[in-house]
Length: 140
Image (cartoon, rainbow, N blue to C red; front, side, top):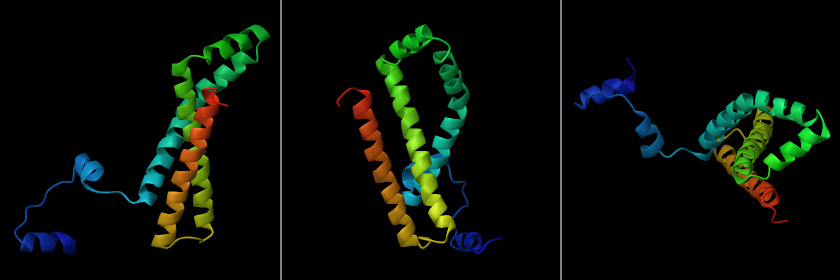
């Protein structure tokens, strides 16, 4: 039995399971944990969407008419939001992956540096996603 459990039993506190609410609401995740979780989510999203994106790419290359059709479909606001979500997933996965590669070289492994690089990843990804959104929705 672990020391933490023995100490809890000595104090007369009952043992309880930690629920998803405790993890998501009650406990504030550090930036490095947020980046890590979002890296996994973005990778999963990219993995699931890859066959569909390859199919659309194949169909758009089939002829000029099919390309024009898909160019028209991309103009729909809902499709633009899906493209923006996939853009975020790619950008986050790429930038967080670069962070992991840097950390694999034993750079920024201590707690302070890790949190700092995680904040930089979040800021860079938000800035790049906003630029993609502005371009996608025709601001420039």
